[in-house]
Amino acid sequence: MVVGAPTKGGGLMGQAEQNPIAVVQAKFKEVEIRFRGWLAKQSLPVEAAVVTATSGAQGAAIGAFMGTLTGDASSLVTPPPNAASLNPDALASLKQAQALAGGPLVQARNFAVMTGVNAGISCVMRRLRGKEDVQSSMVAAFGSGALFSLVSGMGGPNQAANAVTSGLFFALVQGGIFQLGQKFSQPPTEDVFYTKTRSMLSNLGLQNYEKNFKKGLLTDSTLPLLTDSALRDVKIPPGPRLLILDHLDRNPELKERRRV
Image 1: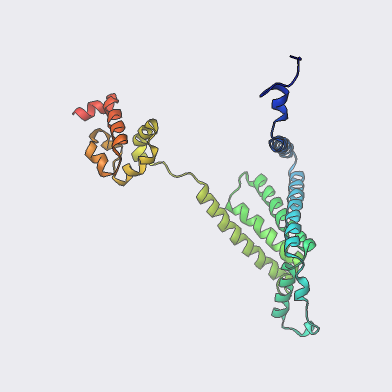
Image 2: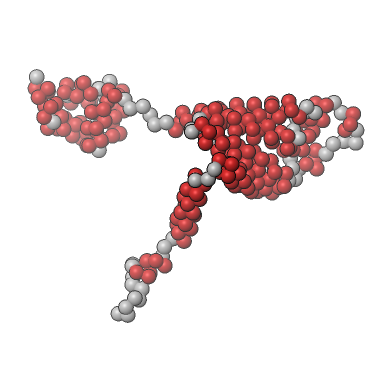
């Protein structure tokens, strides 16, 4: 055998068979970690500027892609010849439709403003307050909504009022989304009345029957009193019942209490 030649299932052959996508993902992750480490060492203005620019670039790419898919529909909502004589509310609605119906460039601008400003303000709030909570999220959303209103020209003739209204709308939506995310991301509260029961079932590989115990209110305090009929009443099959009763009989602490 030639030294260094590829062998089946190992050596050079194993390296050649590496998943190229996994290699690229690993490299990208490594670059991301280094970038975040470098960014964390920078001053607040530098970090905020970099975060705003990168997030804005990502938003612009997303907006351009979406604008390419939807096409430029702004030509369908061009103002009529007598636009100057239109009711201010009607003219505001027309501008709003134009702002939302633009092509790739318009959508890229809109998304860049929303994502960039939101990320930049979130970065500043996180550095100043030392945490990321619903208040910081709503402040960032208010800023992005207000600036989006000014850039896109949405709303009526009073740009200041439109900016405040849009900012408040963005803040309320972002606050609701943040609260929902916090609610669903939190792990379920540990039920202290079934700690020993959960441990026993886990050791026996019978975790699926924890709901049966809870349905029958068979808490930890009832473990020494468990019988075959009690387990049958909560619809636990014969096999798992035998394993549970055998485990209780082998447990020194529970065994003594079961005898009393």
